[in-house]
Amino acid sequence: MRLKIMEEKKFLRPRRKRVGEQTQGTNNDGREHRSGFHRGERPRFGEKKSFGPGKSSGPRRGFRPGEAKSEHSGISRMINERKKKFGAPELSDNEPVRIPVKEVIRLNKFIANSGVCSRREADTLIQAGVVTVNGEVVTELGSKINIYKDEVRFNGEKLKGEAKVYVILNKPRGYVTTTTDPHAEKTVMELLRGCNARVFPVGRLDKNTTGVLMFTNDGEMAEKLTHPSFEKKKIYQVNLDRALKQEDFDQIMTGVELNDGMIAADDLQYIDATDRRKIGIEIHSGKNRIVRRIFESFGYEVKGLDRVYFAGLTKKGLKRGEWRFLTEGEVNILRMGAFK
Image (cartoon, rainbow, N blue to C red; front, side):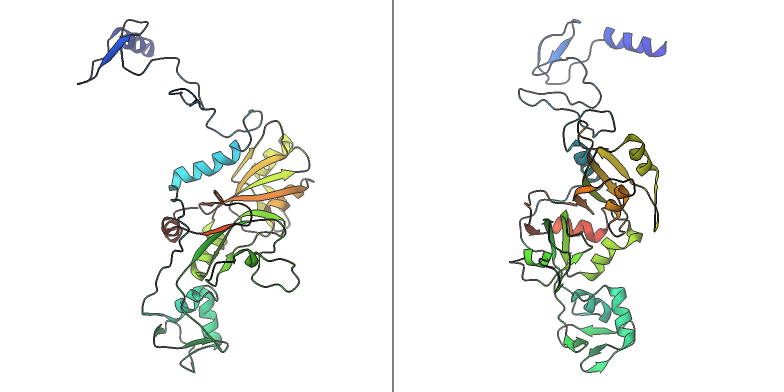
């Protein structure tokens, strides 16, 4: 009753004109309206109001089973929700971001900056006695060196404290994610022609999996992006050999028991309601072949798998096989750990 009275008052009471506001004509209820706007029907849930010709907008949300939406809307919704939550990085100007190191730093950090391994793994190498400084074996943790005066060697090889470089690649099919593999026909490193910095892939994509793959010589950053405790999100587009059943859809969201434990998707969407073989899945697990194994456990064959989002990074603007340096804004967001 109270709501009804308020609605009646709303239409009975004329709106005050703002200072300097021009009016033009009246609405059907006799009230004035501002020039350039008209009060039409209120847009339905999930739709934007149109302003001007040719600018109508469709539904904003992705969709759950039974909702007919355009292709890729489920994937777009997943990515856009995460960008709105954490802030979208600026576009790349294709210039490398090189962050200089300090003159005197810890030995383990210097080793990590050289691209050998993470800082934690460097401590293990130091304790193992395989690192020398100016010809002498150093096993004490916390030791510091001068990057311009001291010579550091790992297993006899001289290390250089390189500036940190970050690269993103849109990986095509048929390339193995490794730095060197004598048995592989093609590795992802072959795609980085023109990148003079010595970098290594962050994480791994299967030979036949495509999409976002990051490279860096920052061992500490690589560990943060791949270690399970940091729970970095990934979004994949999955193409199945047949339509995903509703009961299997629900079970994947609830949890699936695999041979290495229980796993559940963080989000799951049909990309095209008319073709339920195309699925968008958001997951934070870094287990080997986890997405393929989830669907294979229900008897589906994964015909195509494309990673479209990783820790805040997308492949937007990159064709298959193309790469670019991350922008300073993207690097700062990764360093702060803002994206999950």
